[in-house]
Image 1: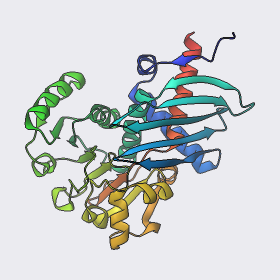
Image 2 (image 1 turned 90 degrees about the vertical axis):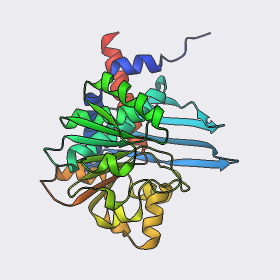
Image 3 (image 1 turned 30 degrees about the vertical axis):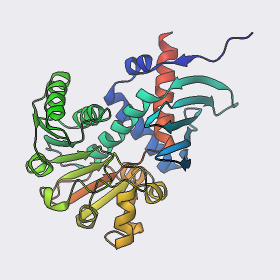
Length: 312
C-alpha cells in the first residue's frame, strides 16, 4: 500500500498562519482575481430537512500554481469540512486539510481585508455582534488592520456574553466590554461586525454612527438575515466577495434587493475594492457582505502548504 497525501490538522494550520498573514494572502488573491489570474468555483449546495446540506466550493491561483476544493455536510447542526489542494500545473493532489480552522481564518481575514479597505484610517473601536466560535477570529482580523482601543461585545445570553468578553480580552490584550444591547454596543463603534445565524435583522442603520464600517459575516443562507434593509439603503459603498454568490445566498441582501433598498449594480466585488485601494476618510456608512468564496480557501490552503513545506 502506498502512502497517501500529507494531511494538515486544525492544530497544524493554526500554527502555520497568523491573522496578518491571512489578511495579506487574501489581498494578494483578490488582486490576482482582478487581474484575471485567480478565481472561484461558485458554491454548489443541496439542502434537506431542517438545515442539513451538502456543499462544495473551490478556487485557483494560477500564479502560485495551486487549486483547491472544499466540501462538507452539515447535519444536526454539525459539519466537518475537508479541503483538497491540487497542483494547477499537472492536477496532482498535494495535500488534504481539515478545513475547520482554515474556515475561521478565512472568514475573519475577509472581514479584516474589507475593514482595511473601507473603515476610517483612525477607527479604533469595534462592536462585535455574536459570541460564537467565529467571533474571536473576527475580532482578531479587525485588530490586524486597525489599532483597536476597545471592543464592545453583545450576544443573546448576558452571562455567556460576559464570559466571552473576559476571554476575548485576555486573548487579545484589548479591553472588551459586555453590552446589554446592540444599540449600546454600537453607539461608540467605528467598526461593527455581525457574526450571527439570526433569521431576523439584528443591526439597523439607526444603530450606526456616521462613518461606521459594517462587516456582515454570519448569514450565508437565504433564510438568515442579520443586516436590516436600512443598513444597505444608507450605505455609500457595499462590497461583497462575490456579487453573484452573495445575491444568491445572503438572505439579508436578498431582502434588500427585493425591496429596492439596493440595486445589483451597487455591489462592488472585493477584487475591485482591492484594485481600487483603501477609501479615504468619509462620513458615510460602508458595508462588507461576506458569504465566503472558494478563492479565500484556496489562498489560505496554499499559504499553509507552502509554509509547511518550507519548515519540513
